[in-house]
Image 1 (cartoon, rainbow, N blue to C red):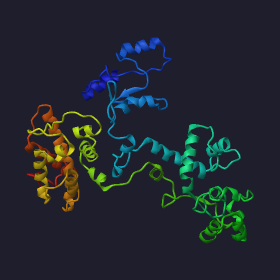
Image 2: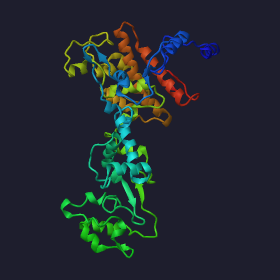
Image 3: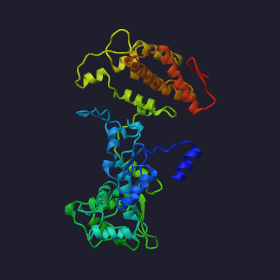
Image 4: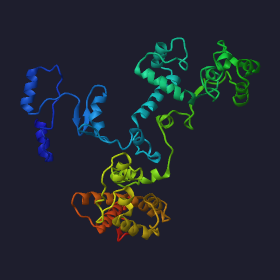
Length: 437
């Protein structure tokens, strides 16, 4: 407590004892617990402790520790049920160019990490790999071990085996690779490429077993394999040599052949078709809240009356941003209302873009593809996001009783753009009257 008092005196910051907690082991003597409570005046608590919304704990991770946080992140609870889910978690975890917002799905990251574990198990002999092999594989090769009861880690490793084993290429040197069970041809393990009724010669263990005087044993290859497989080996693969080193594993997803978690994640993760429009939403230096709102506008994920009507909520509709009553819709609020038309025309006319005859998405695309000099590209890219953000703020302000003029909207858009260029090129830009200097 003396240390805390010295800190308070030096920093001017006071420790809030009502928000602080003391952790003591559950076997601590109650006399000690009472003494600590009396001296510190800070109440005792057990793990997990919530700090700034996040759980702090010392044991293994449990889902219930993070459940309150998950509930508040994009999804929230309401009395009598749950609120609408505007986007699935899988969608949000896609890369930005595929329509997500760049979160990495924990499930996909876990697969990449277990893929690394499988790579180490298969390519790096160790005490651990020997133990795992003896425990779970017995007399079978690890490539063909069926799914059986085992630890959580072993089951996850087998799941990744089915995804990445064929991406481990064994480069033939001495011919130490397993002939049937390892991918030394580049086509995958031969065990899975021959028909079940073809038969497997169990006397052949390693690749060098099918060589004769430093060359391929052609007759034996044609006898054991289908003709196309045998021809592939004879034409594409150099026979092993006893003077060479042991065969080397190569990760086929990296040019240098070294395994990386990033390449495994890219290969095993969930994916969608990349689109340029999704990538254009995210501008370096633009506040996340503005870019994310643009993402919701582009994907029509806003609680406007036209969307609610589409999903079955029939109700009277009124646009709060207009003097004359009109139906609230995405196109009206952000493009067809008088304030929206004036704002778009004010900025787009300076870039030589005509607003008449366009839809909202077409106007946004015109900004993204405008033929301007290189240093103006990020400004034009961010312009639609700033416009829809300020129009949304104006609509909400009017709805709750605060008047916001069109001039104010234009000024705020200009201020956001000015803040952007200052962040990107501090001291070299300034913006006034809609023009950049």
